[in-house]
Length: 353
Image (tube, rainbow, N blue to C red; front, side, top):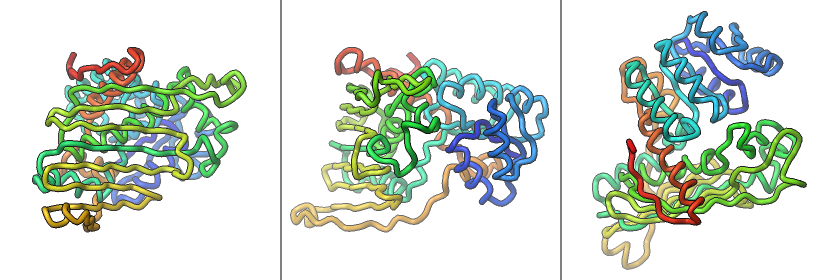
C-alpha cells in the first residue's frame, strides 16, 4: 500500500509513525506548500518524493491512498481532488468548515467508490468500544442521561509548547487560518464519543461558545485570536436521552482528558481517557446500584483508525468512521454555532436539510 501524506504539521508525524507500524504500508510522498517544512518533514521520515502542490502529486500519481492532514479549511478542496483521482482518503477532523462542504465530500466519496474515513482518533479507545457494546446490548437499560467532557489546558501551560510563539498552535486560535476553535478541534471528538457510546444521534442541540482575551488586542503577529476557547451544550438524542457535552482549552490540570458518564434504568457507565489511559467503570444491577458499587470492566485492545483504514482498503473490514459520519458531526458543529448566535436557543438536527 503506497501512501501520500498531505500536510506536514505536527499531526502528520502521528500519521507517519502509525502507518509505518503497519506491515505492507509504504509512505511514498509528502505534500506541503512550505518548502522548508516539507524538506525537514520528509528528511525526518525518509520520504523520497516531495511535492509543493497536490496537483503535482496527483499528476505523479504513484500512490494508492492519502492522509489529509491539512488545516480544516483546506480539507474540502484537497479531498475532492484526491477523490476525483480515485484515491482512498483518511481525512483529519473536522471533515470541513461547514455542513454543505462536508456533505459534498461524503457524496463525492460515495460516488467515487473509494475508502473514505475521518480521523476520529478516540474511537481507538478500548473503553469507548466496550462501553458502546454494553449499551447496545441493553446492559444499562434504556439510556436516560449522560455528561461528556473534553478537557485540555494548553492555553494555561506549555506542556506541548508555547502557543504564543508557535504557529502549530496559533493557527488553531484564528478563524482566518481555518480554525473552528475548540468546538471544531476537540468538540467534534467529544460529540462523537458521547453519541457513539449512547448509540443514538442528536435530534436537537443548544449551546454557547466563549472566546477569552488572551493577548493584547487579541492578536499575535498575523494571527487574530478570534475563535472559541470553551464550548458547552445541551443535547437531546433520538432515543430520548438527554445530556451535556462540553469542551475547553482552559481545564487547568488536564492536558488532554475525556470523560463520559452515561446512565440508564439498569445501571451506569463511566468511560475515561485520562493521562492517555483508557478505563471503564460500571455500576450494574440492583445490588450494585443500591450500594453505589462501581467495578472496573476489562477492555480488550482495539485496532487504531490507521489500521482500520488500511484493512478497509484491503477489503478486510468496514470503513468506520466514514465521511458520512464526519458530515453528520459537521452538522452538529454548525448547529452549535447557530445556537450560540441565537444566545443558546435549541436548534433541530435535520441531516440532509
